[in-house]
Length: 100
Image 1 (cartoon, rainbow, N blue to C red):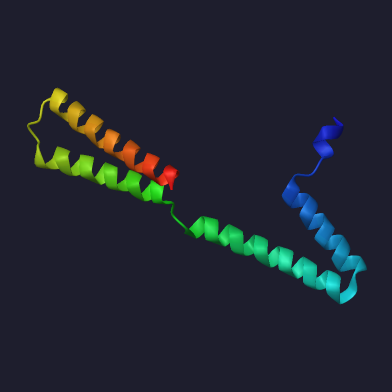
Image 2: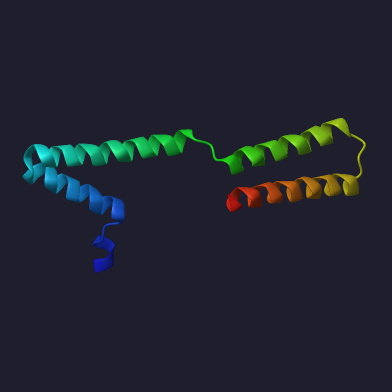
């Protein structure tokens, strides 16, 4: 039960910043301001940025849909082969990203 009251790292840093703000005058205020500014900037960045893996995923879906659209008479086996090929290419590109 006591574990439910534990703070994660971000909450702990926030509380340290609040204490510094309350007890530390201008220096504490500056520390807390820097912490809050950094946290807000990080959250905004994460919400607005798109990872390269997301871009690769979208490109893969587009290529598959273009194949399906341009080959309306393709058999299930042909469609399956094309999807497998595109997924393999996607996996290779993601592996290259992770290797960077």
